[in-house]
Image (cartoon, rainbow, N blue to C red; front, side):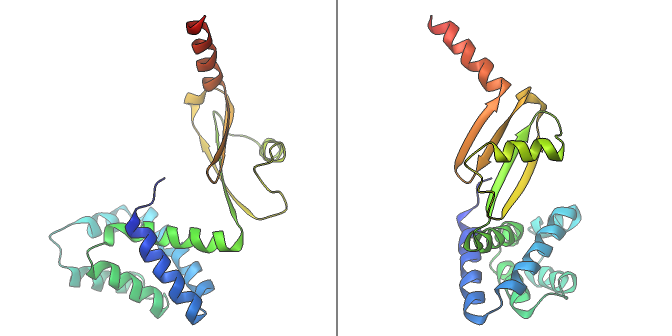
Length: 179
């Protein structure tokens, strides 16, 4: 998923501030909560996306929903809403999480398969590649997409291993067309 420039800038500003004030760990866990709340609440997303609701009302509601968060997190949310960027709130929080994980050396691994896999199969795939550093922390996201027919697509950062049946069939098709 591509992240907007807006989300990257706000997240970087928040990271710089939390590093200076020593609040990175606290805000990190709170941004996870923000992402979770925004993912689970379609009504909240609709409310924030509604252009004819005044920003003061949105701030009021956000302060009530996120009242358990630190002052720094609440100030960020208020600032985002005041600047009319509330539709980017989830992306900003996720980008902040990504930036903190990058600093901590956490790899983001995405594995796409045709069917759900067992824990043993997942471990075997991850051990079979040099892209995933087994000694470091990694965040594994598994997607199930039947359209790849079989095999898997492993993505780590900006590198990808495509061992899907669909890709192999497309390659055979190209080979036949060339000959």
